[in-house]
Image (cartoon, rainbow, N blue to C red; front, side, top):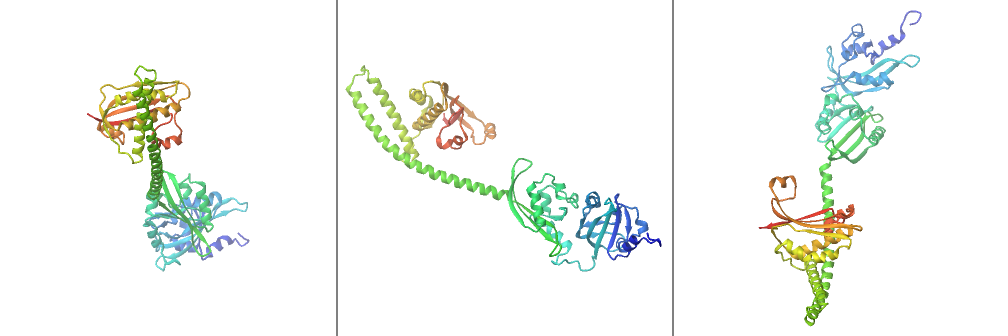
Length: 470
């Protein structure tokens, strides 16, 4: 006050044409100027000491703005907070108004914050409420809320102004709990690069990208997002708009298509290998015929008691087995028809035991455990020969020094319950062939190509199921 007792500060506030309301640190009204009295319908004498939320009832459509959330950054840190444009003011003594403005800190001379000052601009809801773009606040909110993708509108402090229903559904949010809260309060663990993107958008940039996230249930979710500024005027950025779209299904289809292309390329490669294998097998088969022919002639010329007779028999047996393997290669190359027939797996393996023992290293123990009363299987015997030879040779390669390879057969039967728990199995009776070793195991590259190699390097246990024909 001056020497005449005049409070010039209060007088100046009362004579402003702008709506001004001053509040204390306790959010209680300390001053209402004349435009504020007209706007709210309250007299200053009645409003003094009352909570500002009782005097001003802000809402954006049906969602109430929380005064505590608006005032907190002003009273605590001295930041200026914008009140969203076209915010409704619901008051009991006058018509509904549209509000915009800001809340500023009130400081003492030493800089201490002692309260806050509301500076409000009003426009009657009964008059034209069209912003420059020709959309009313109601139209804008209706558009956002019903948008088919997730949209959220934020002010400069990243406080929620409006959201689409899809945004609420995608992020499991409740609209009543959002308004006035910052995006970082709602999502406290938001990645830093998104915070950077928000600041870039507030500076005028438009950003977009695609990202993969891990959902709460552990599944992957792909999002396409766009962040861009919205403008109060051509010169002033009012905040940012975020749009996100779940593109998980599209990404999974892209991944599946890429896998199909890789499989196609692999099949083309296998076809080329098959043609090469067929040519090699054909030439090798011709040489085996020469070997068998000469061995046969040798056996005709010597007596069974001759010391070379048993060796020639073994050579003939090995050559015949090799011929069967070349037939399998020709079948693989689609140049030989596979001829499955009923056979006893134990008998087929017994015929190979001697050759298998010679294929593996000298320091490796070979154990053969045939199952009893084994069912018959329908297979080409050369296929079994090839499988056993490959498995045993590769198991041998995986063992450094002394080790053991075990070969065993069993009858097994799978019921409906077992098949439900093990996808890929079908109910029925089977003969099980198991080749196991105590090698070092296989690396990831070998595992990736296991089905092309038809073997498992460093096998711990490899099981083959063959349908049993009873």
